[in-house]
Amino acid sequence: MSRSPRYAQRKDGNEKIIVEALRAAGATVLISKLPFDLTVSAKCENGEASMAFFEVKNPQTGYGKRGMKHGGNDNQRRFLQSNDMPVFFVDSVDTALAALKEMRA
Image (cartoon, rainbow, N blue to C red; front, side, top):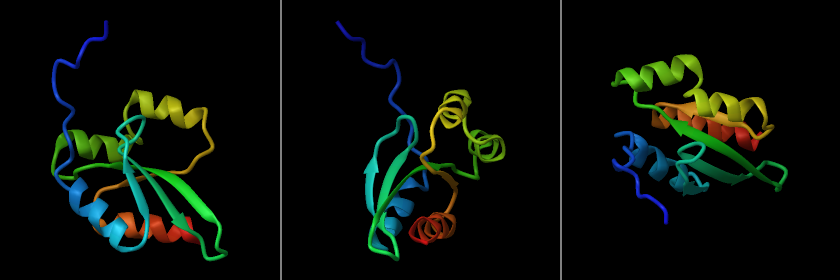
């Protein structure tokens, strides 16, 4: 028997506009939450596919500010130590599109 979470997972207030902007720019976005908020796939300049995790942080909350400063929560930092997949911490449409551009390079 599995237990349901006591509280619903909160979504950063800026996540919806970031997802919309990434999709408008041609990326495929999966809202995954674990270990990071988004899994993003996009075509590179050479035609190959590139994939990365995006962690959305809201700079208007204390939790979001700490996450940007410290590179995520403890679970995310542990995951990063054992994984080679790129992870971008984004807090706005501009930082998300810059990360997407870096993925495509």
